[in-house]
Amino acid sequence: MSFRREFLKGLWEEIPVFRVVLGLCPTLAVSTSLENGLGMGLAATFVLTCSNVVISLLRKYIPSKVRIPCFIIVAATFVTLVDLFMNGFAHQLHKNLGIFIPLIVVNCIILGRAEAFAARNTAWLSLADGLGMGLGFTLALAAVSAIRETIGNGSLTLWKGFGWHLPGYQPILLLILAPGGFIVLGCILALMNRMEARRAARKGRAYAPPPAMDCRHCIICKWGE
Amino acid sequence: MKETFRLVGVMAAFCAVAGLLLAWANQVTSDPIEEAARAEKRQALREILKGCDNDPEAETVEIEHDGRQWTFFIGRKGDAFAGVAFESASEKGYGGPIRIFVGLSADGKVQGVKVLQADGETPGLGARIKEPSFLDQFIGRPVINTRWAAVAKDGGEIQAITGATISSRAVAEAIRTGLEVYSENAAAIRSKMTARPSAAAKGGTP
Image 1 (cartoon, rainbow over the protein chains, first blue to last red):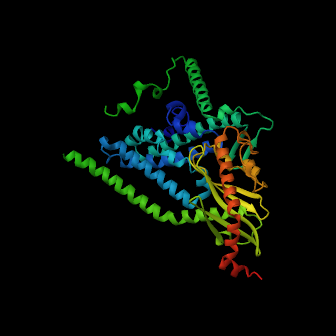
Image 2: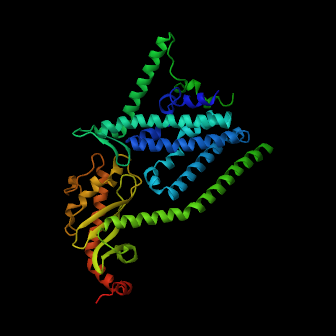
Image 3: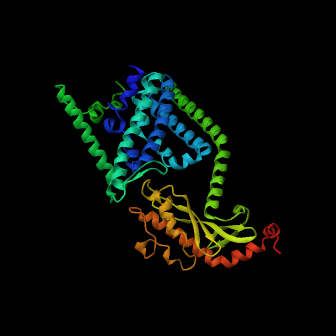
């Protein structure tokens, strides 16, 4: 259990959207352009890291019967703090990210990591977990939104007015509409499963889908054991 | 029983700390937020009232129309009337109301449009109504005879954003409503404008 390992697992092995299949709601909603995907990802990373550290520091004082409301209070407080301070002191940034910030409260990755990791590990490791999971979420969002924006809009915008546009390309609008989110996400999941299956076959092992995709192994149900 | 008190106690403590933190944050940030909103409005007014050298917020005319209060910001170049700006809104946005600022030039043309609020529009689709490529279509259009101010599907001259007809329609509607209210009250606005003692004193009309 090293800092490095906890950090890296969020980037591939347990990458939130693709492997753990958490946080689908914001993924499908905001992945219409790369700029939005990155914005949402980074804002969520910040809140996730803060709430992970705080929950991990307080874990000895939180009775398990009321842990969920306590986690939600911590996450909601951080989200509101970020919202207020960003609005007051980085107004332009807040205008760009404003719609995503309230969405972070209901991002199940925050609650999921609090429950599955921060509540039973030290603050130092929880920091690594928060950073790794947050960046993994950002990476996943960036991947989905880059594909959707390129095909669905014929452009790729990194930040306000900084990006490029495919000239003469007739965009497939479906990709930036709601169904496009599901289609792209499904294709990526299938691709990742295939890659994992091939890797397993090379090593002569049978491939099993990630535990988080299988309800019998759900960590949340195992809390009481 | 003891257990219950402990649970309630912990929850209460969490809420109390969270409440105190938020109260503090609110106090610290409320002034900067208000200031930023004011600065944004000032900036928007400057952008849509090009060629004015006064402070449009200093000279306003209030008109009541259909039970709604409309504020018209008067732009001047020197002493001459150089344009007017006002806020208009449509309730027919995709996910909530859309509020816009419209600026008119002295010769009765739209000279600038700025979206103030469109929180409910889909990022990447409806939210693109804020982009110049869409808003520039309104510039230079006449204030009277507003049949152009509708999307092409509804018989107007505005190209809706692909996949975001509802949002585009809402912006066109807000502009049309605003222009109609302005046209109907133009005479009243003009008379109130010159009748204002502060304006007369500041302008020093001969």
